[in-house]
Image (cartoon, rainbow, N blue to C red; front, side):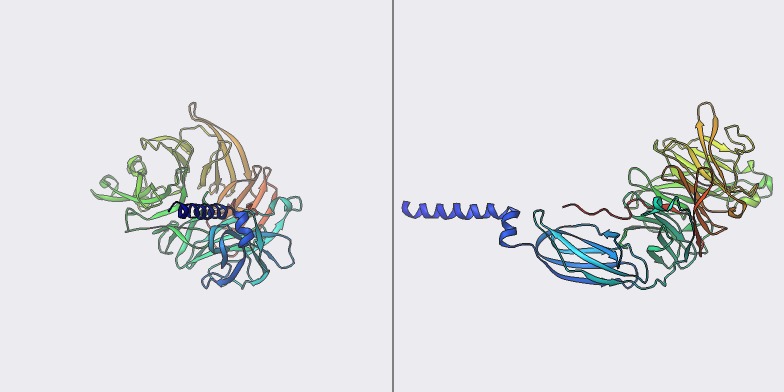
Length: 471
């Protein structure tokens, strides 16, 4: 029996040693070197710029795609599929009616292999996308604009969310049967939208949809389902906690008999809501608790859309900036108490000079320099500008930091935004002249795109293109 045990122990030790050696990638690479097998290019029928590539490898590995326009040296990359032998990879950054070449790269960490090169040809886009025409690019600015991409949207039905490159070419889009009222590029590199029928007024919608670049819906909130009990409008964004916040339509009963109304008259105003990405309502606020309708001598005329909020922005301290177009004011709201901390603008808490006053403003937000910035549509003097202030909220003083007045032909009565790009330039979305602009801080126009549609906003999409993966 003892004689039998010794060979068995030796065999076990040998097998154990082999098993341990097999854990080493270098041994696997020698015995079963990594190989790329079947590569299946899938045309996504609902989108002409998006392609799925299914890849098989003979063992678990990481894999990604690189692809490029024919006769171009500019290489694009997919995300990395990790530690599997069945990879699903996506091409998501292409232009219509263009020839490309793509290649698969797979790696075990110690050994990397490349597939053959394969052709790919995109077709022209026909779904709800407008044209964008590059009308001007300053020669001193063209290098700085390389690899810059921008997200915008089409509000009408059918609508779409669209990403364009610095030449105005569409490189990504997602069509919708409804209009896309506003869109936002999130830190997670997803596209967040308010979607709604054209009959819903004031850039309003009944759905909040978030999708990744492959078109996969990762969040979908809808009025009448779960905690979403109000229409949303004008704004949807994410905060530093990863929650979603938006403006809402709200209403409340007031006694308006003293101004010709009824005892229980409905006044419609605006609110703010925060949802978790799972759709749970976390917090809610309404301006109807903080403003007396009888303070408005024309409340009977305005009660169906009173003061008209058009942007909300959550600051680092957790509090909110909310822009009221019809008041020509921006309010700061305390998240913990719901109190209005201050009001900036016409008849506000900060004394302003005539030149500091703004009207029908949009997209009030805080810059990286802690300045309050907005697009001043300027309906009172028919001059649109980018405007920012340094506020002393203790002493209630406002110092103008930025004041870029655009030429009269770029005056826009409604919608739009202005925000910094590259730290020392300003990007504008201007709805009435149907133009996107970038200017320097003196107002010199460096970039101009003409738009064949009706956008609400334009914002940069950092991280849209990926760096070459490192194994």
